[in-house]
Image (cartoon, rainbow, N blue to C red):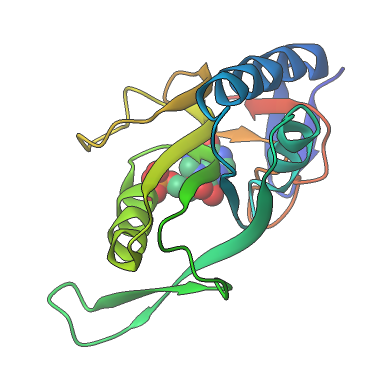
Length: 178
Ligand code: IMP
């Protein structure tokens, strides 16, 4: 793998496909153990989770359903001027075990907002699975239940993660080369 240029920035190889697959299988195997007696709903957070979600679900051997949601924010009238809305959740999740699937947890803002919205819908449990986690950037207390890989506070690209909309289709992960 070589250095690549995406738009105006250069990125170098960081996490190989093999390493990603090992991490994905590690997360899947923990979830398989923890949900033996449940039929959880896997909720993929779009857009970034699509590759992780696909690979993860191939290694899940539970009875389960899958769905995708997106967190959209628009200008509103609350104190921060921003209102968050969850798009795409059409089913009733009350009494269900939910596993939120994220590409990366950085500051944790997205995760906390999602949790806030979903916890009003009477799910039996809500847990978080993320491929990547940046502990140095994380500013919340909320536990992150399943983590594929911890990474330093650097900007990464590929395997679903984008730079200005580009690079999501790369099959491995690159890091900003500065
Ligand atoms: P958070 O709300 O700060 O935890 O960030 C959540 C979202 O920011 C992720 O779902 C990603 O879409 C995006 N993000 C955070 N770090 C990176 C990165 O290093 N590369 C690409 N996207 C990122």
